[in-house]
Length: 495
Image 1: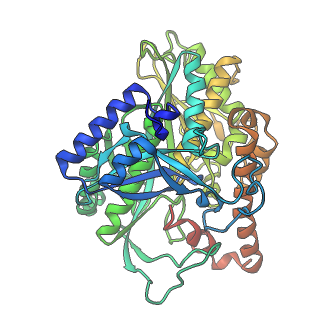
Image 2 (image 1 turned 90 degrees about the vertical axis):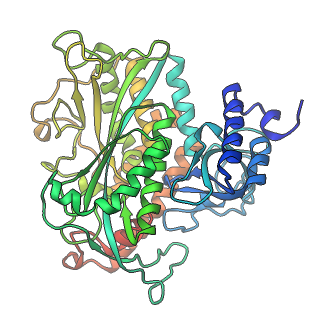
Image 3 (image 1 turned 120 degrees about the vertical axis):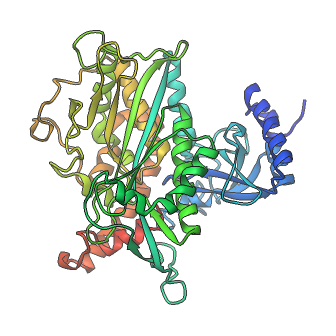
């Protein structure tokens, strides 16, 4: 038996080994010269290396070494942990001194990139030198959560509905702006809107940006993503993109790939696509990520949330909602992980501000879309920030829903007027959300104490830098669109 890393630790299944062979065939057939090996970091940003053909083939068998250094960084690359303490600040054996980890391709995710010559991409999982999964990797957190889901005979089906902004770069600022430093983001490019006015679903608005959207749309389809629609959203320059349903981790990979493709293709055309919730640009409105999910029988694929009577959902579906609501406060740091995302948490804003569910009601946190015996019956979680980490958002949803099913959690009465319902409010700041997560026993059990402590520390760095900036710039009249310059620097180009 080979002693190379992947086989030594039995990392790839038989299906993955077959996918690896198919990826090699594609590399040879398409003349691929570079394969971008990527992994999602704690913020949902894709990091990795661009490997030559020979190096990719070697990585399929041995993985490839990569520094774990990005796990020390908050969104502005401030170094939150001291890598040169005995445990690197993580309280996890083997992480002292910032060691390398193994980046192992998941060959079923291999795709040729339509906008880059002779280049492909493949998502990776991270492993310790002893073959154990790297415990801080969000993709591993989601895989573990879905495995628990599957142990009960269920699969999670997800549909992605994400809002974002398209802007035109006027001045990239590279010759005269700040290039940034660890903990201090660079000046973002100066941009202009690509449309004017609040004209929801107006086709003339959509046509104005068709030349920019067309290569994005074609690339997504060529990569096999199940694109459904690209719409003109509520605010000027705001776009909504939806995808058909995907099972399990494929939904998170697709969300990450979609954001990567959109930003890179737009940038090549002189535009900047941003998934920041509310940019500091006059007239812009908050963007969200609505996550549509249903629970199906893992063996038959039958939707287990379909009501057979006048109830909003099946009994299992109601318990799934009950779990989501029960853990909604603690999950907030995962569904809305940015300072800026909490600007959505306002009543009568089409974003939820409390733990409610409603029948086809966009004011509720959990919107039920169902009909008796309708196999498409499902729920829409409307709480998400458009910049949320796809892997942690889905993991938080899957864990909470599974707990609701397992422990038969009652969601309470369905709400007719969600913004006035007498139920618990959602956190209104990232600081509040992080405190709720820190003291939560459920997600500590689901994701592990080490990860929760790590994530809390990471997010508190972000909050502390924001609070310090606001202390020095307290005049809200100088904020643009009610958003601080700190937020715009922190998130606009990064996300």
